[in-house]
Image 1 (cartoon, helix red, strand yellow):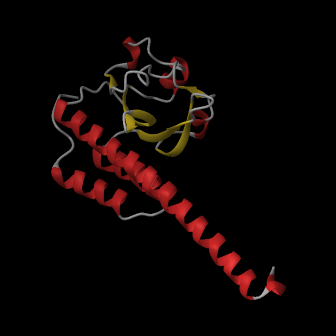
Image 2 (tube, rainbow, N blue to C red):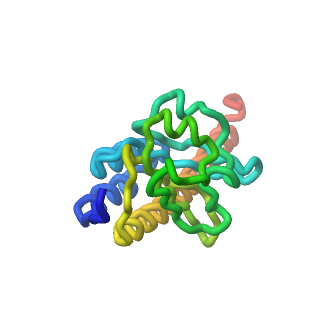
Length: 188
């Protein structure tokens, strides 16, 4: 593939709306991975969340990749497309010429030719990864890379918003339970 821009304003609008119009992180992430695979005509897409304790990248949503590939083993942040500490996107234009992969054999067997890995940042900390997989070698344009970075920032905001919304709902439910018990102790 050439270095043509693939992400135009229409694609960016659709993807951004999918993020903004969902209050369920899992559903939003699943829609987003499907949209990116379809609109960019790529093999697959995965959104990972960084587990700060284990330093593993845990799958939030994925589309287009086989179950076998997804179960290949833990994805370790310091071994999988090593970039997390830098907070910078990494583009592996041709996996055959790369030594950045944690699972090179499995990646080749899956039919992946290129990987674009974009950190999901929040307040300067890496909280996850947006990863795109292409069938063949892929030169990503600077504009597309900038768009993907903005998209990853929006995913980070959506992740935070959803967690906050869920926490507030939990507090509200607890207050309602206490209020119900207060009014009628027999219900407690």
